[in-house]
Image (cartoon, rainbow, N blue to C red; front, side):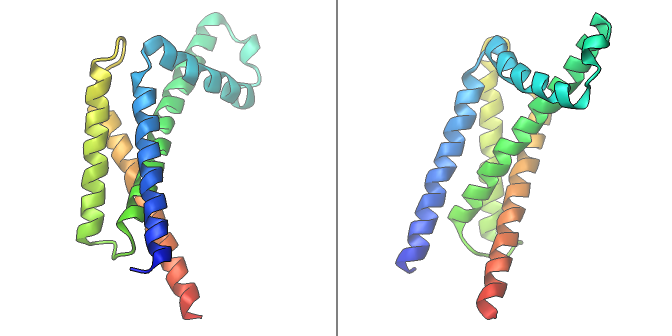
Length: 160
């Protein structure tokens, strides 16, 4: 392997570790800290998607807040695992989509999602949900597919 490819794979491996650390740190937040973080983002989104929020009844405001916050939290799971899938897939390197390398990458991401949910089980106010593992794994698959698209683009440019 040439030095450029090795350096790229090492950088991707480092970014994989950074993603794992970020996921771990978010999972260490108790329910109040986690709600505070997602609440800030939720309020910003509500100001855009529900400009009449201030005119709603308190019950309508709470229902809107709960619905948007749920979506924000699930999108956060999906997004951070998309990054993990992307960087871990880059670390594995160029390969075919249906390959041992892709399978190993997806198993790695799935197991990390499982360990993350198990970790949350022991954090006050947090829960362990298999649906989150599925969302996380879907995000990792998306990140993996993005790397495959990137590899295809790079390969096609080298041919021209």
